[in-house]
Picture (spheres, rainbow, N blue to C red):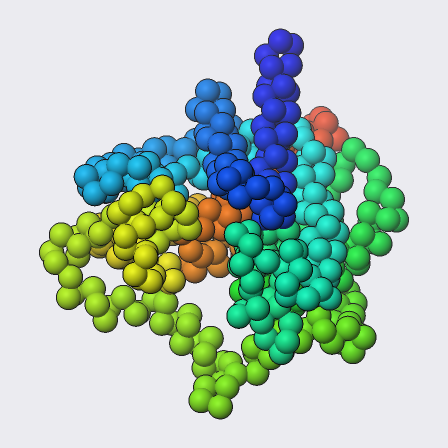
Length: 475
């Protein structure tokens, strides 16, 4: 009994920490705009302190189920990072500590999720997933306010107080909502797309949902998400959500075709007319995206996006071989291309002050850590994707398979394309999705166990019936 109580307390502690991490990520930018600039840097690192505490928690308890697989691989990768971190320390010691945070710290969040939501806490996980739907209310409200306010208003300025009018399109700013910049808002919306599906479609075993949570809130969330995605004016949000929905739907159809197609048609019949109506009633919400997606006289939007995506994987080949041998093998120092590195490292500040910047994930990875980091970092990410794919594939309950399909879509897309080491929010949303798949897999295992036990209770002569069925089949 005492052990169960201790486990429950640990789960509640982990759950509260997850809520703190998510809300900090969402409101960090807005808070930094209203506090003195000297305090802004402290707020910037709050999420890191929370994740550091998460890492401490997961190392002091026994991890459930397959979370141990991930924990073991993460420790191996951490050891393999040591040569790169030592090399970076020789260049600049604070930069080495900063780089370790960027690459290794946030994996602890994925281990925190199954600790917070073991097999008996399905309802608590549903509430956590529904938090993302509730967060759409303040974030979309702030985005709409920004869209209607002049660029000079404090809500539309950067966290440093600079004007963002240079990023406007068709006379409308690319809004950032409660986040530090537009990209962070887009990454949040991509995570929302996966989590709200889990919150609304995960089966409920202990409570009956009201009409509000069963019907009204999912419809309202769909509308708010649509507004948020397009009002950013960013293709990251639009293509990220589209990719998550399409890949997630394809995966869910693979596992449960009838249920997925039926639910997909119902959602489509609502969202498509709603999108058209919103575009007609509030064209200003879509103006920035429409202008940016129209392309230019020289290149179409499709060609531009194709060049950006494919170029992100191949651009590094133009300069990689021209470097010194040391840079080719182990790069030029970890963490330099990450936001905030120039604030804590003189070495990074010197390089960044010239305007040098590697925007693409692959280019930045190769430049920072050479071929060694490229093999290590992407090898680890692809191993995690395959791990999640196997968990999803082995799930038996169609409802759990459905919600994990959209989590898996988020893991695949961001795991392959996301600037995870450069942008901590992407890494945290990604690891949250990984941990959620592990948690949902645990729910599925518990469902299978209870279903098997129920079959056994209903059939006291199960062994005799099984023997007779074998003889009948042979005959």
